[in-house]
Length: 230
Image (cartoon, rainbow, N blue to C red; front, side, top):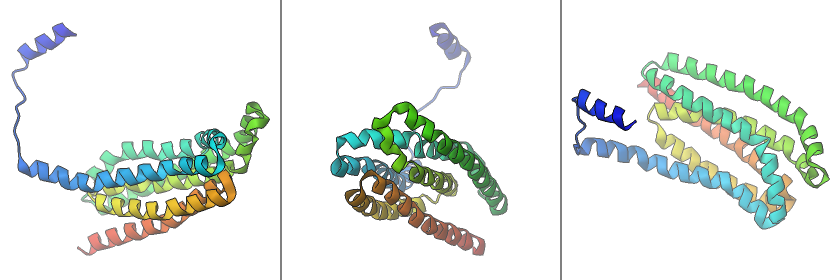
């Protein structure tokens, strides 16, 4: 490896140089001004359910909840993340052609819908075998597993909007949605966990995403309507 680096240094004459440009710094800072708060809010929302379970249901319930989460909502949410990373360059390429962009996005949503539905059916069918394999001490998973499956499925569909808005430099919209989601999810999940335990946690998550999706659709339609008028 060292030999290869030495040869490339001799053969390749171009050398990188340091140049400070305020223009690029300003563009990056404007972009990060929305991205950083969005990531912080999303991180908080994605962690607070476990904190509420530990606080109101006890540490022993945390393990049961996280295991159920790992085999239900997490695989479906990861599916959306994978599609988001793959499709972002495609959306960027079509950013100036809104018709092709929307067509590409709808195909992605349809793909996530089909694959996610198959995943839900498979995971729901396999859940009984999983609980039987784990033993009676883990039987509490069955009370909230289907609810987290529904939550994960909706999250996988909702998550497709992230890469779309980013490709259009609409990270401000994502930050607003993240803030609204934070305001809705934290009190709903906290109250539901306090009243109904880990089953309430799952229902609180499902209710919160059902409230966030229409808000996201509203921003989506308003953004594209404004762009089309412009």
